[in-house]
Image 1 (cartoon, one colour):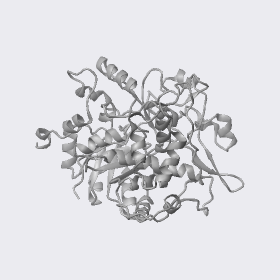
Image 2 (tube, rainbow, N blue to C red; image 1 turned 90 degrees about the horizontal axis):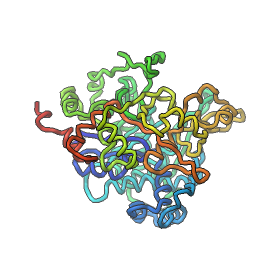
Image 3 (cartoon, rainbow, N blue to C red; image 1 turned 120 degrees about the vertical axis):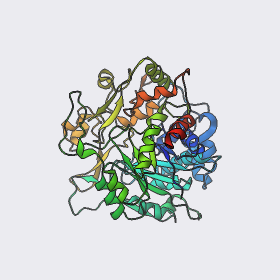
Image 4 (spheres, rainbow, N blue to C red; image 1 turned 30 degrees about the vertical axis):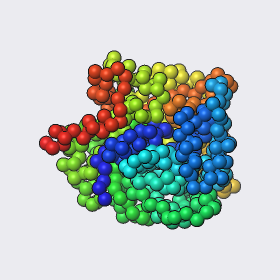
Length: 477
């Protein structure tokens, strides 16, 4: 196996879309689609009239025609919905999700991977969050139906994912242990997915994709290498300067004068120990320069994962108006990124790009009514009657508290789900005029993107990023 040198990061909901991943793959590296929320993405793209016809083209290649037709008929709006019309919501995940949601999730992941792989023989990966547990089984199966080559997962301990990939390669049922707050030590809550209940036809065995765990410590990497229920093929070792969610600092949380988490020596990863595990590894988080790639290769690493450098490229899914606005700000001076310790309902620090008229502004955040209607970052909890409920610290405070949550946990929490959908031009519209606002994330090295804009008007391509990172004169030093 010849591993890729560059892994394009799986940024947010729909930023790392099929178009971006396809371009990176055609350039000879590993293009990665973000796997979060692909059920909603498919439904919303169809409701906007499926510009370009890409979703319908992908659905036409799905192995079960009737299933694809059913989803298309439910959500497709010829010509697109009116701008003041609300999007038809998809069901929120629960431990026992309805069949229609499982079907939509399988199709959404299939379509994104299929389109990323269309027309070339390059490698395509998909990135998931272990913490977003409930959709992951259906998502993985859909991506494998699409022929995905790599699965990357972080934001948790994905110890059971290798075994899931093994099972799905033969269309066998699989399960995952469900994290449930307030559960007793003897409780064993699990979620299950049986491909045969969704795909009622015999299909050939599927390719088992390579599995890369995204880790921020030697301890986690060693645990996964030794205790995972199947083959772990490598690691992405991510530092705290990366965009999106970051691992929290080890030990007691300390904040800087600006209110950001302080990372110290305990948070530095011993790369020699990672290398001694004997598996390929890539460095991530502030490694968007060929000199840093050279450093990683000298350390024995396989390459680097880069996300932020692709954020503003032509192929990324970021809304074009937002993209142009950030590019203009970069031309005028630095843009600020704040590591917010409380913004994410997931409880992980989250990098937020400072932008006017987004949820990064306190006044915009305060004005938004608290709504939780997508639910990807909801967590499970055990009710007094022994059943499982779902709650999110970004939902209305009274609702969260009624579910046993601590009111203090709601302070400063932002609805990432709706904000990230708005980032890609798919915001929900409420009462005809209230449109969800974006919440943009980026790595700390975003200001270095000026290098791709020198002598240009407004854009650069994903291929240019790959070519910059692979400069031979630097890598041969």
